[in-house]
Each structure stands twice: as structure tokens, then as C-alpha cells.
Amino acid sequence: MLVDRMMSKRQRASVEAAETLLRGDDATAVLVGTGGPFPSGRAQSCTALFVNGQFLLFDAGDGAMGSIRAANLPLGQLDAVFITHYHNDHYADLGDVMEWSWIMGRRLTLPVHGPTGITQIVDGFQSAYALEATYRTAHHGKDLMPPEWVDSEPVEFAPPEHDRALVVYEQDGVVVKAFRVNHAPVEPSVGYRIEYQGKVIVLSGDTVRTNSLLANSQNVDLLICEAMNKELVQVMQAVNKDIGNDFLATTLYDIQDYHMDVSDVGALAQEANVKRLALNHLAPKPQSDRQANMFYGDAISELYAGELFVGKDGMQIVIPVP
Image 1 (cartoon, helix red, strand yellow):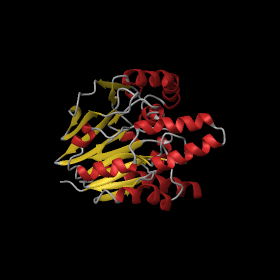
Image 2 (image 1 turned 90 degrees about the vertical axis):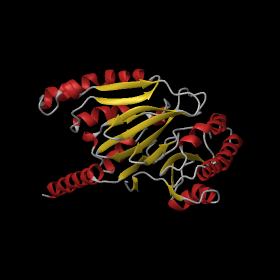
Image 3 (image 1 turned 45 degrees about the vertical axis):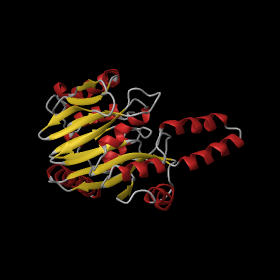
Image 4 (image 1 turned 120 degrees about the vertical axis):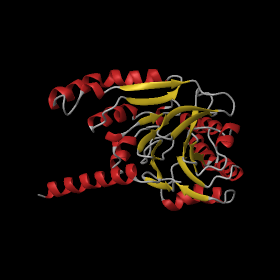
């Protein structure tokens, strides 16, 4: 009886979440994973966007599946995936997203959008999960696990040059554009701009400050941007060097040259007149809300006057439409 009540409560929560997110008039961004490049208690990069009845997922780093389940997101109704670049903290859980969306009821070939190279990634995951999928159908039957819908389809594009944005998805008034960012030597790397009924949401991907990010973020309703506190990373680097951990000290030194410092994020958001700013890919990981505000919120608030969200897994940000 207790198990029945627990299952019923979880199922009701999932149904209610689906109704709220997919049938609402507003656009809702869910910060599924806000962790940085190193493993931590947070899920790594992953953002869900619900707009005009569509469920779009941007990146799927390690831990994304657990965070999706915890938030009761309707994975079986996933419409499309978009990957920013091919560091594993942005796509480690992509195979699980592809497979579990089918298991949970997806009845379309899942498009997985990404810059040059996404075909290799998607084909690799499909090959790895091919046996698993046949077992599901053999055990549960074709009605419950129809093999014709298990596939995902890579949708590969060449990143646009300069500050331009390239339309990579258009469905029922929802437009997703990709623009080039700078995460060298990781090439290609892109950010995404989502437009619907005059509302605009931008995801920076991993990048240093670029003209393309500034241009595509002008006057947007929400910018979801990576953030690194380089002063703290430098302290961690020095400590590891002092104790003889040269590998980690070198790694901490290296990662500073292709991410945005909190000062860069705040200044860009202010210059672009961003209405709302949400921080993800936080490095280093804050241990509490108080630390999050100290490491990120306080520094950025000195430069940015708009509404600020220091991201944590599961946070929802609602953009009224129109």
C-alpha cells in the first residue's frame, strides 16, 4: 500500500509537471545541470526549455538524467536536443537521454542538433545502445517499445562566421539559431538563441567574451551564461602546486583561458541590456547558497543591474509570453 501511494504520488507529480510545462502559455527554462567541468554533487551542463508546447534540451552532461528525473520533466515528450560542443561535460548523458526518451514514450525520431561532429557522437551512442534497445522490445513487445521510434537523427550544421546566427530549428513559431563562440582549442563551439513571439533566450555555451555573444544577447529576455570565478580558481591552483599536485595545478591553470570570469559575465550582460541573467557551469562549485552568492552573485551584481539568478539544479525561470 505504501509503495502504491509513493508511485501514485510520483506519477501525479510527473503528469502535473508535464501539464504545467508543456501546456502553459509562458516559456520556462529549467536549469537541469549547473555544475562545472569537474565532477561534483551537481549535474553538469544541461538546460531544458519549454515553449509553445515543445520540450527542447540543450546539452546533457554527466548527471543530467538524474536531474531530469528529479524535476519530473516529461522526457517521453522530448522534441529535440541541441549540443553546444564536444567536451564530455556537455554530452556525457546524451546516450541515456536518447534511449530513455524512447523508453518513456517518445514516438518520433529524435533530432539531435549540433555543429560539425554531431553525427559521430549520435551514431556512436546509437551503436552502443543497439543491443539494449532490442532487449527492451523483445521483453515488453512492439506496442510498448516500438522499434521504429528508437532512432535519433543527427542534424549537423557548420557554425556561421563572425557574429551571424544560423537558423537550425523552426517549428510552430519557435526558432532556434546557432552562433559561433570561442572555446579554443575546442572547435566547433556554439551558443544558441531561441526566439518565440518576440521573446528571446540565449545560452552562451562555453566561451570567453566574444562579439558574437554580445551581439546575439542584445536586449534578450534571458541570458543563460557560464561563469567562472577565476580568482578562486587561481587560489586552488596555487594550493595544488604547493602540495605537489602538478597535474591538477596545471589543469586549473589551463581552464582559465577559455571560460568567462564573473567580471566578464556581469559587464557583458549590462552592456547588452540583458533583462534576466542566469548563471550555470559554475566553477568552482559553491558548497551552499551563501557561497554561491559570495562567489558569483555579489561580484556580478556590482556590474549588472538586471534580475540575476545564480543557478542551481532544478531552478525554473519563467518568461511571460508575449
